[in-house]
Image (cartoon, rainbow over all chains, first blue to last red):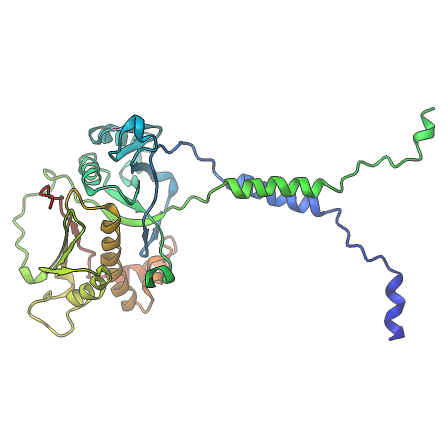
Amino acid sequence: MSKFKKKTSASQDIPTAALPDIIFMLLFFFMVTTVLRETDILVEQNIPKAEQLRKIERKSLVSYLYIGKPKKAEVYGEEAKIQANDVFIEPKDVLLWVANEKDKLAEQERDKITIALKVDSEAKMGVISDVQQQLREANARKLMYNTRVLTEQQAGL
Amino acid sequence: MARSKSRASSEVNAGSMADIAFLLLIFFLVTTTIASDKGLTITLPPKPDDAEEIDLIIKERNLFKVSINSADALLVEGERMDDYTEIKDMLIEHILNPTNDPELSESPDKAIVSYKTDRGTSYEIYINVLDQLQGAYYQIYGERVGLTAEEFRTLDLSNPKDQALYDEGREGIPMAISIAEPTNIGG
């Protein structure tokens, strides 16, 4: 017992001087790794869930289309709309949009473009098939339906 | 005059620096959403006039027909179905056909899934059923190389070893899910 008592004279404070540095490192890590969203999403996005997900191999080849009921339903109506970049487009404009997106890529990669569809659960297949027909026309045939992960417990319910 | 103050500590009190940094950190943690770039991938068929007009005669027994009407009711192989989670096992049996049932596909490479929707079908059920269909294929691929469906899907294709497994799993059994143009009948 007496052996241990000798140590009590030592300071019990943990030196916290380096704590701000550690926190700042964490902060910088998050600031550097996060990508700010470039576009405001104007449609509702309640993405459905699925189990058989694949990851996108190269993010630089992906262009996004958002489909869903407009958030400002009193201005744009209840019908599901397609949003590309910052504006609503009609299905027939998809062809032009794909051409623009392809122009942004290097020449040898243009055929590898992947279109990611972020579609609201309540949207109907009509608008989606219109888009798909246009994408076939534009020869952008790699398609991905963005979904969230369905966990085992949810699947059991 | 100035010297009288020199006894006081000249250090800036940095004790609350950690708190400030924490606040910033928490702010960033809360406001950022981690982009989820995951989903179901498909490849669309080429343009109608690009594809050569081949009169493909697909035997009825090789087709696995799934259709959904605008009321989100499901028709699988000519029968109504209420629980879409059964499709996966049905499709696996259809593709592999272990008992050589004359109603099911001749061989795994000849099996074709025909998936038809209506313009009024909701996207959610479309994704749920597509998930089942793809799940059946991934499970078959996985079993061939001794992996689970999930392990097979997450194989890293930039790694040659994984790529070899991936090719081996898919060898001879194409994921033939044909998404037909929706009907416009309604009801």
